[in-house]
Image (tube, rainbow, N blue to C red; front, top):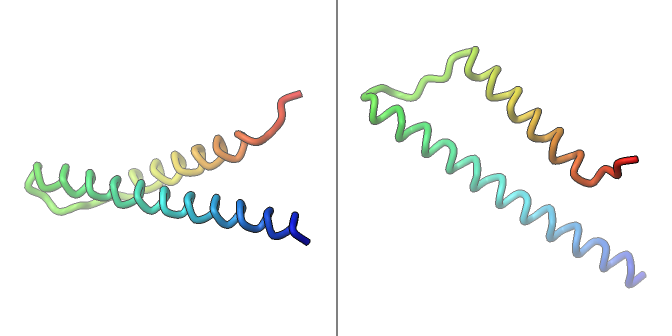
Length: 73
C-alpha cells in the first residue's frame, strides 16, 4: 500500500513539473513570435504551411521524448 502511494507521488510530481515546463515553453514561444511580428510592424499571422511545419516539429519532439525511456537492444 505504501509503495503504491509512493509511486503515485512521484508520478504526480513529474506530471505537474512537465505541465508547468510545457506551459512556460509555450508562453515563451508565443512571446518571441509576437515580438518578431511587432518588429516587422505586422500582426501575428501563421499560415497553413507554417502551422503544418510547426505541428510536424512538435510531433518529432514528442517522438524523441517518448524514446528517452526506451531501452536499446
